[in-house]
Amino acid sequence: MTPAHRTLTITLTVLAVLIALPALAYAQESTVGTHTIEFDGYDVDFTLPTAAKAGCLVCHGDENLIRLREDRLVSYYVDAAELEAGPHAAVQCAGCHIDFAFTAPHTTASQDWRREAGSACKNCHQDQNFEVGQGVHRIEVNGNGNGVPGPDAAEKPICSSCHGAHDIVEIDDEGRAALHANGWEVCGRCHEDYWESYNDYYHGRAYKRGAEDAPACWDCHGWHDIRPSSDRDSMVHETRLTETCTAPGCHTDPNVDYVAYAELIHGQRDVLEANPLYSLFQRVRSAIAGIFGR
Image 1: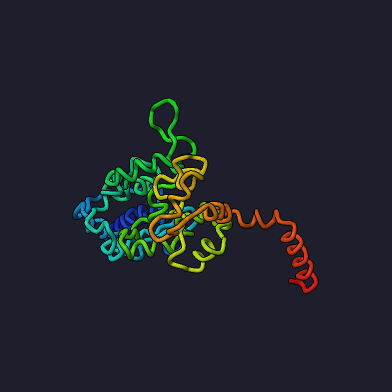
Image 2 (image 1 turned 30 degrees about the vertical axis):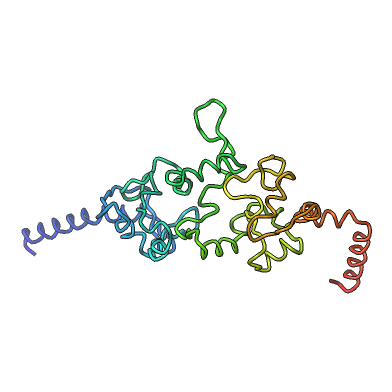
């Protein structure tokens, strides 16, 4: 090999090594998971082809849009057909995701984008938002007048907690029927004790068995402005029970017996356990079950 060829070979080898070094360093900085590569940061920004819904669905319309979050895979897929079938078909994504920037990845003014989007409904549904602000689900603010939510704000439900998000339904006859059958998701999963005690024969037990004419929680307690039973404005306050029981589709001739029965709707077990005969029956049944190993 001539000196010129040797020099050329060495030069090409050095160039190849220099070209490969950034790629090797890049690979060493990445962590490979289950079909996912995570990096410490991004240095790429891009502008969506349009700020409308179609632009967001360029990425979120892909069923494989999954990321690793706190050791679990999270899907960011949005079903476009589900959106179009709902009442917000004409609303652009940024109408609810009001704090999103159109960069990759998304940057938000809020640290909790789910809560930000799930409570953005108030911007359009102001009457309903005012009613919620009067009830037990209102988000308390600090007493210093700065309007900052108090420490219990994260525990309070927001609009999407009860109504859903992308799968929200129109409140028409069909939507009401679907909502009526969904009492556990809407109320029960937060109020498990009341859900368990809603077990009287004519109301709770019938509702849980799918009776369409049995009342869901909100048929008695109200919707947005739910109040505690001790509040005189509550639908289940003793002074308003007659009015509540005569709501359309319910009792047409309530009397003192109906009002007295209201105590059994959530309190049937307490009343029964206070009855000595029932207590005796329970002990006998437990004894028999113990004998047969059940």
